[in-house]
Image (cartoon, helix red, strand yellow):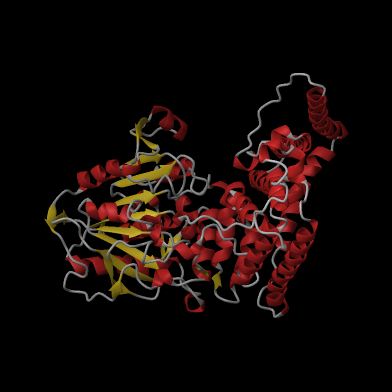
Length: 611
């Protein structure tokens, strides 16, 4: 085999003397043929890793269900356009006109005429100069943009569709256009083609080997690696804030963090993270850690670390997570500190659970949570974003059926759903980098956390999907918890409601509307960026901005228009709000307070459990 990276033409030509066409010519056909054979061998291993679990009955394919739903959805779009011949002709003419204009531009360019093609959004995947300089690849790129724009416009202009069908059609079309991008294929991507030629196909051997490894790691499903996981170990270089697990039950561990100041706020802080992912998004590393920062600001910080459930937890529902999670944490804090009143933070679905618990506590006269903060939390799901695509009666019934066997939803299912929300950023670049370029992904703590998936107990997940996404029961005053019908207006305590401007999971409009349903004083703040970066934004980074102090009782757009924009992190603004509600200080507290014996060091064992 030729030496890796060796250029057989280097003795006669320098790189600057080589013609552009030579970059597309295989230099060592023999080595190339051997590597193609090796690639096919690795591809066979990948196929075996995919097939074997299915032959053994360990994996049941469910691809037919979303494909069927997609076909049904697109059939409704097609029905609109094909039901009127004039309308169908107009749609066809629009596409052909785009192709004709592209062809005309190409002819003019080849003939030497000066042309200025309209700019197209390309992104990093279209950064290779040959997307513009090589007529073949330029044609593919332009044809792709014209076709995808036309297809998306067909969906947007379809009339007579209900809102959910239109939403699904737009989402499915986005998935298809992302998947069919010429940047995703060897033969249609100049960068990939040149890399294959330069390495005589060695990149494809490495890529198919990684594909086989990832399917085996997913036990028959593709576990797409987005980060070099070998570079991270929870508790060693990620989730390293010092503290102790001071209590645990079937659904969670309670962590108390070591103080960093001589005195602390009298009122402790409880963080309720989502159980869909692990809590250490708030403790990625010392520079990004909200937990570390809060401790350094004189807070006594407690965090719920949810269990990674298995069959034993199948019947753990929302009441279980409320009682054995939040209420258990409040009991633990009171034992450890002697304090009855706490401030609480709920993040994403952890915030939704916190809101439901607060409404329940209001009816039960439980006043231990004296102030609440919501990070990118939805309590009204009318504008719940693209995740609503996955939620209708038939899809929930299918999910419930799949959970019956093991008693939980596999974490990979939710991870895939979240990745699909931004497929062009979170799926296809890694498919190209890993399996076509044959390169390991870069180590990135955020993406490591993103891939560290958790399961969902069947009862809990079914309750969440039906009561929140499908029926919107919490905001409509119909959700029942512990035999009580919940009303968000019963929440009279001060609330800090943080949204993120570009959030695709809990849209800022949705968070704003939900906050207006609460009965107390609600301080709404909108951070720059998205669901994660908008929250995990330490002041030292000097990134993004936040909006606050918009007009009271305004509609969302009017609030945004009238809000004050402040550069940088919202964290200091939140701390000022916390202190405005309770500023009394006491001597710093050690984990357990001498009353509870620590079980183990933070971050504990629950967070280390893998799916």
